[in-house]
Structures are given as structure tokens and as C-alpha cells.
Amino acid sequence: MDWDNLRYFLELSRGGTLAAAARRLAVEHTTVSRRIQALEKQMGAALFARHAGGHKLTEAGRQLLPAAEAMEAAVLGVERAAPTSHEGPSGLVRVGATEGFGTLILAPLLAQLTRRHPHLSVDLLALPRMLHLSRREADIVISLERPTRGSVIVSRLSGYALYLYGQREYLARKPLITARDDLRHHDFVSYVDDLLFTKELQFLDALYRPERFAFRSTSITAQHAAVRAGAGLAVLPAFIADRDPLLTRVLPQEASFTRTFWMSMPSETKHLARMQVTWAYLREAVATQQGLLQPQGTR
Image (cartoon, rainbow, N blue to C red):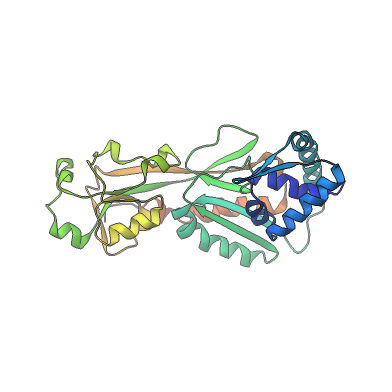
């Protein structure tokens, strides 16, 4: 049995589409298709049923899956037992994170990591949605909710602060805000409720419930851009909004929130050199960003 073909089988079973498997394997989608066809020919059975949304395992595919996963675990065991290269850690580590944190905090830090370890490659998935270790969407996931299921290693990475912000010119032309009740005279920017991927991003219910929103988006960077353009008020991470001279905090004593970033990885990969180096580096590097993540005082 060709292990390479089984790798493609596993990634397609987890990703559900040729494109998702191709991204994970860093190949063209046609390569994934060709490998799956070769494996199906070898097995003498169709392993996937093709449909409009992607690929689903057939009964033959479901029967093969446990054996393929066992072979994957064995390969990882061999990698763990292999001597560490004198050239340092090598290979690909895929890091998943929320959009704002990934873009503004992690991207420059991970760029420094790849300079420190030239044989290491990093994929940063900075997305406004939840990423799943169980589906192998990433090797290390930084999330707002602490994982409670699966065989994973979990560590508290950092807390971070959020405040209510408005554009200075917008605030100058609108009624003065000195108390929560004054918020009824203002427009608001927020997330799209039915597409919210975690309850940890629900803020306004605890502060003020607007009758309507001037602008909503699944993207925190889009929300920041809308507030910057004067669309209204929004709860934004301090590490995004405090560095923008056009914005200022509104009711900073009352309209302040704290959330936590959790970092996790599968237990089965914790002994791989590339994972150990990336994990330890992220803990150390994010600790140096506390002035941005949890700023002191008012602005």
C-alpha cells in the first residue's frame, strides 16, 4: 500500500474538497484527484462519492479510514523517533488563528520565526471562523474558546482587551456620550449575528442593545474600516484600534471587555521538532506583546 496515496486520501476525507486537500498538501487539486484515482484502482472500489459540495466517503472509504489513520500515527511515531537535524527544525507548520490577531500580531512574529529557522515553513490561516484540529485544518490552533474534546494539548496563550470605539469626527458631530443611555443616539457596527462563530464575540448585549446596526460584517478588519470611515461605534480589540489615531475609546470604564486566546495542538504531534519549536516560540513571542494586547490606562 502506497503511504503517499493514503495521505491524499486522509486529507480529502478531512477537507471534503479537492481544493481543501490540495491547500493542506501544497499541491495542485489535479494531483489530489490523480492520487485518489490511483488508490481507488488499487483498492478496486470507489472511496469517495462526488457531489456538488465536494467529496464524501463511500462505505469502502469508511472501512479504509481507520487503517489509514493507524498508518498515519505510525509514520508520526517514526518522525518522533528520528534524530533531530543539525540544521534545525524543518517542514511545514500550519497555524490557525482569528483574523485580527493572526494578521496584526502573529504575522510579523511568525515571519521572524522563519528567519530564525530557515528550514521551517509556516502557513498562517488568519480567518474569521473556527478552525478544527480534528479535521487537520491546522497543526496549531489559537482560538477564543478552550478546546474541551479530543486528545489535544491546550495552553492559555494570552488575554486581550476590547473597548467601545468611535471615529473622532463622528463623535464630534453626534450627541455627547457620558453615560450608557447616551448610546441610543448613535449608530453601531458589529458582527453578523447568524454567522457569529463563537459566543465569545458577543459584547453589545451586556452594554447596550441597538435597535438597528448601520454596518455589520463577519470580518473584524472590515468593522474597523467602517468605524474608521465614521459609520458608527463598535467594540474592537485594543491591539487593532489603539494604534489608529482616528479612533478613540468611548465610555472606557464601562465599555471594556476581556477575552482569552487559547493555543492547542494534537497530542500525537507534540514530539515533532517543528511543532515544539513553533509552540515554544509563540508562547514566548506573544508574551512580549502584552502592551498591545492588554494596554494599561485610557486612550
